[in-house]
Length: 419
Image (cartoon, rainbow, N blue to C red):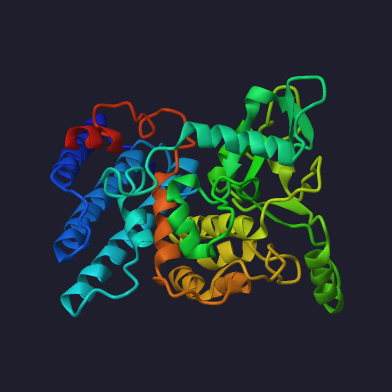
């Protein structure tokens, strides 16, 4: 098959179109203020904004595809291709949710499910429509600093004499400046949304060590990008011993976990993690996490991260027509989910909406279902879509990844214009 490469003039035309769409997007956002009622007019404008956003991502796809020296099937397996395709899927999902709100409001009074947590999700400036002072807002630096300090203490991560911190995935100390305090349930989603999904906890856990892990910054980058997940460390056993083995893990204190790589085409898989180590990213597969204390993150937040990555992988592979293959990757040797342990992690009604989007072959996600909550069924799906859209690029600057281009106007700039 021939390369998709075209002449620079075609790419220039697409970039000009992207610039026009960015201007249209900022125009649609500028006059828009949060409305306490979130009425029909508000949601119609949300649909308009999401349609422009989706068209701009489609232009990004064309720019990237036509800058790639190879066939489309090969492009779809690149990190850049997968990132763009999953973002398009996330934007399609968000648009559908907004269109559903319009339909509901056109055909009756606002349903009870229009909770403040759902509204905050859709109006947080870092994820939604660039409306200020409604969602989680800017990250509080003191909260993040305290979050890191509390995790270092809970995980007993500090070296007794050197300025080093322990990374449980590496199973070794590394430079203190090279360790990230990573949220499992992202702090940008806000405490209200966390409460709506998991239920209220006292004390609140958005900035609790139970919602985080310390890890080497290079590893954290790809953990956040969905290249691997953390699952229960349940050994492979005969079918008749599976139930008792899972029960043993559930009652064990502390519980142990391991790494599972879920992207078979990951471009970095054979690269070394750091200059001083022979360990490659691919060798993280089935690696047991080693902690310095008995403290562990909450299983429900690890399961949330697992669901985020399943949705991403599903979207990446479904664009290639390999959704069932993607599901097979998440099954252990004897057809058991890689998570391995059923539990009351996420509301059943929200997980059902997630499975409906991904396909019946992902029904194993329901193994983590708790009782349904009286919240919007699409809250979890909408949140995961927003998280995919908001995730930072893992790409180097290039034809598509150069976000400093004048063609790209950020949501922060849109906020400034609004003021």
